Image 1: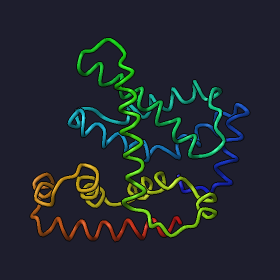
Image 2: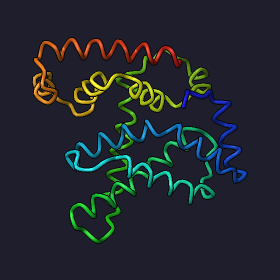
Image 3: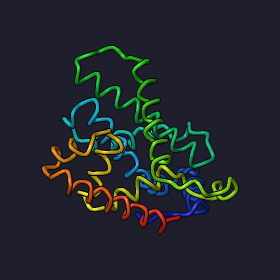
Image 4: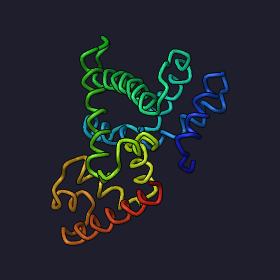
Length: 205
């Protein structure tokens, strides 16, 4: 789905509040790339990529549909935060099943929520230029979501080199080993990927 402006987003949110299931579905789809990125980072860190994040995202969307009448927020930031909380709870359930733990662990859910918040904040601090004024920021989409959408539009190797280096914290030699490339080619790939990401971000700003 193409990017929508803040006004379009508010209209979708208002329509969803009236019980319009189609509007709610459209609203949730705006955050698939964002949640997919968070899932990729979390699954890579905690499960070594041993599961597909798409099932986790779909479960999060289903829960969001069921519990949407309880959502009281009015801004995109509040909606994104609410989705992250649902996502954290579902991820905690996956980890419990994976490690054979039956009991709910509230502390794990809180830690996951905090970790997701940090990952979301990292998207902004790493890739968004801080030249907008507070008034401009109020009229723009949630920046972490826009970065995730821009990453999703990159070629796979561009996206992977950015994720490995910026989110997984790997050195260039480690990224080269993971991607089956030379260190020299990885450095050039990384530079091209960042340039492409910046252009994608400029087109949506």
